[in-house]
Length: 376
Ligand SMILES: C[S@@+](CC[C@H](N)C(=O)[O-])C[C@H]1O[C@@H](n2cnc3c(N)ncnc32)[C@H](O)[C@@H]1O
Image (cartoon, rainbow, N blue to C red):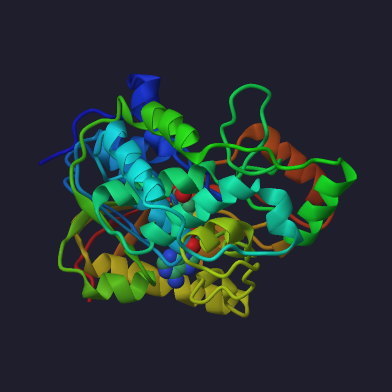
C-alpha cells in the first residue's frame, strides 16, 4: 500500500476531520504537518510517531490510507490517539453508553469541595459509572466512548445546549482544585445538571458520522525506546514531536482526564518516564538520541524523519542546537536534509520582543532527515 493524495487538510470536507479534534492535547501539532510530510514522500507505506500525543500523525496516515503506529507514555495521550485508528458508528457508541448507564450506579464517588462544585451530583454519578465500566472494557467501541468522554469531561459553559459535563473550566487543561474552587465560589457558579448521554450522543454524531475508513495500526502505551525495541514492523515515514524542552506538566495539566482513566482523584505531580524530566540539557539530548537510534532500527533505508521541536521560553535554550545535537549523537545513519522555522511570524515577534534582550528568540523548528546507510 502507498499513500494516496492526502496532502492538505483543505482537500478534506470539514466533517471528515472532526474525529482528529475529539480531545485537545498540549502542544499538539496541526494535521497539515504530517500531511506535508506525506506529500514529500508519496511512496510511504507505514507511518510511525514515537511521541504520538493525541495521534495527529496517525490521523494523517488514516487519511492517506496507510497503517500507522503511535507510542506515548501518557495514558491520556494513548487513549485519545487510539480513537484515531478506530472506525465505529455513532450509534454503537451511544448504545454502549446507554447500556452502561441503564445497568445502574457503580464505582466510588470522589468527595470534597472540588468535586461538589465541578459536577452536578447526578452528572457525577453518571461520570463515575461510565468511568468504572470503561476501566474493564477494551473493544473498539469502548475505546471510542473513552476518547469521547475525555473530550467532553471539562470545558466552558455555553449559553445553549451544553457541550461539556463540568462547571466552567478550560477544555485544553484541567484547573487545579484550589484555583477552580476559588474561581467558582467568587463567581457563585454552581454546577448545572448536564445529562451525560445527551452530550455523548451529540458529540459522537458530530465526530463520527463522516469519519473516513480506518487503515490499521496500533497505539502503544509506554516508553518509546523500550516499545520500539520490541516492534517487528518497519516504517518509511516518521513524523513526531518530542516534549518541548522545559515542559514538565503533561500529566498534571491533564489530571481530571487521568482520573477518568483510572488515576487518582487528586493532582498527580510525578511524571514517570517523561523524557522532559531529564535533569539537564545534555541528558535530554542523550535521551532523544536514543529515540532516534531506536527509530532508525525500525526504519527502511531511505526513510524520512520529520521532527517538530521547541523549547519553552523559560528554558532559555536553543531548540535547533539541541535537536541537531540529538540527531548527530544518535549515530544511526540519519542525514539532516532541512531545518527551518515552524512558528508563525506573529509568535516569533512576540517571543523576540520578550526574550530578545536575554538571548536569541525562541521558536519551534522543523527538522527533516533521511536514513542513509543501515542503522547498527
Ligand atoms: C509534543 S507532545 C506530542 C504531541 C503530538 N504531536 C500531537 O499532535 O498531539 C510529546 C509527547 O511525548 C510524550 N512522551 C514523553 N516522554 C516519553 C517517552 N519516554 N516515551 C514515549 N512518549 C513520551 C508525552 O507524553 C507527550 O504526549
